[in-house]
Length: 521
Image 1 (cartoon, helix red, strand yellow):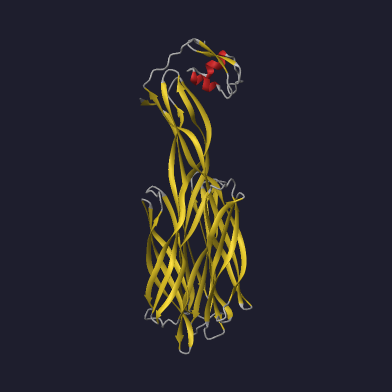
Image 2 (spheres, rainbow, N blue to C red):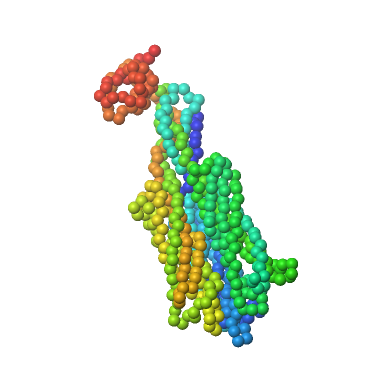
């Protein structure tokens, strides 16, 4: 046997294999630095986890990362309490069991601290215990090598068909960087120390154009600082806008783009102004945007073939290909009240509000993707009592409905939620909160196709024709091409001898002359 010269088409595709999460226990004991006063009460712990390494093993995913804790606490200062903060760094790692995971698969992962608890061991030591949630998506990437045409061969009869494939044409990780300097005006006191600096991505946007992709987002900084010479706290909110254009071949405005944004860095540091006062805050943010471009590729491929003077083998494979059904998003605005406990001090001023959205359930119902979740909220407020500062936490539920065409019960989906904005205000003896949540969804289905993947010449003799002609009665669903292949002749010969003008249709019950040893002239 020898191979026949064929023209091939290579289709790349990516299929969602698995998605889920794995929990990593966080636990450690940390000393208060000598430069800081004794801890009296822990107010809040901010966590910034980062994944530094992913390694795909057989049936396991290794994730390694680093985490930064910012602990805001109260310390006794003479006869009163004052706010301070301290920063710690640690590492974490976890092996996540994922059945069927292979080395050549692609894994996307992000991490978030689900909850963290601080315990005071003594006035100079605290312990931090919590759970870091690693959210992963595993994709199986593959290529399909299809036969489009047979070339340089005489007496080859071919039947072709038009097929459409979802083709992942490009994938790239884009870095967005942004810096800004804030000057605190004289209407506020000079900064002594920054106690909290939290960044949040919002207003994410990706636009496709001819030959390029534009990515943009805002990183909102929420900063709490202590004024110099006093225990008073002040807040500063500032947005940094970041955008970049990246060249992508063969993109156009309506092409399908999947994106995910991850905050890589949100840092701030102090600087002095011309008078030598600490009134300048330098902000620095970095975001990683992962972009995947999908396109519908429509091509004419070989469906079947034979030769009248040789025997050839046609290899056909049933393949299951991933089909990107689409992506979508919805925005939810929810309001609720956080109720104080009897032992809680009365709030007089909101100092800082932080939130995080989590999905607890997702399902496909009535052709829509429906998600349920809640926003975990932390509010630090100033009181009118000796406690000075207090924190209240709560959960606000939300629902989201996302329309994506053709979603069915067996559709694979990935759903995520994130905050666009969060506000808090004192309302009687409660804290009223208003949250805007954006929920995104991606949906994949499967398409089964039967495609020619190889053609080769077989070392066999061509069957001899038994008669000069054959009279054949057309059956339902017969085609000229099928009859020509069956009787080792050509469509052209059958059409010519039977005076058929439209080769695409023959009437059932019609009698046809099939040429055999006789020659058509």
